[in-house]
Image (tube, rainbow, N blue to C red; front, side, top):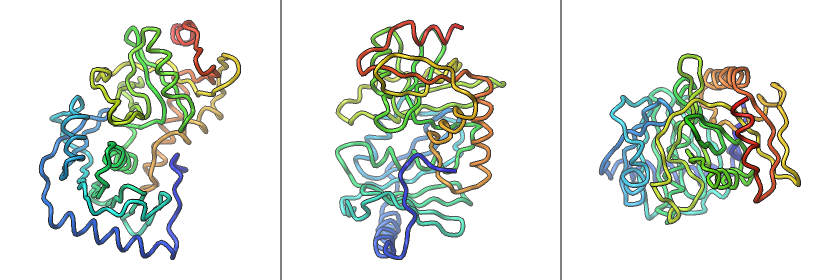
Length: 308
């Protein structure tokens, strides 16, 4: 299965940065004990995040506080924010895979994924934005959480009158723009970058997550809602010259949504389960191609499909 992230698999030329980052990860987690921990509810999954460092603390204790839960965690992520992180040492997202473990490096973080324990350890750059810590938590969920608890889908999710819709796209595909246009029409944004879906009694439920696309200084937690609502339609977003809604055939809908599902290839069985989940989704929830203008999305376009 493909992942929506642009990931390059490591070659011999990547051995030096791997050794450097792995040594830094081991050193930091050996010398620095967690300063606190919280379990976040993402979909119906509990994700425990243990943290050290100010940027990691602010992410968990301030930014993600609406998602705290007492539920038992399915995944544990330990994150250390480190001033010594060699920013830019890995220029492209690079994946190193071995027996039962995988390591993912990017310009601002390095994470180790352990399949046996369903846990992750990460060292991140203490950037002014939450991107580093946020990415580490996303990766762990994408690697380990089964679809009956949570599937993270690149897109925006909005709710109105107790039902939800998703507009799915990859980067610069119109997620934040469509969310903004719907807010002007009375919709509430659940998430503008990576909402969660899961199944309850043969119904798909969509919920918000702390995974937003905007910069840290733009975050306002009064924009967040922890509502969990039935998913009534999925729109595959396209920026175009006209506003047009076209029903999407199942094969095309399945292929596009699988490309947009956040997944890191740790376990083949989990990849198969996510494919089966998407197949059920397109069988139960109508999927449309939605072409819209940059600043124009007529109010009845979405409502018409939701209330059909």
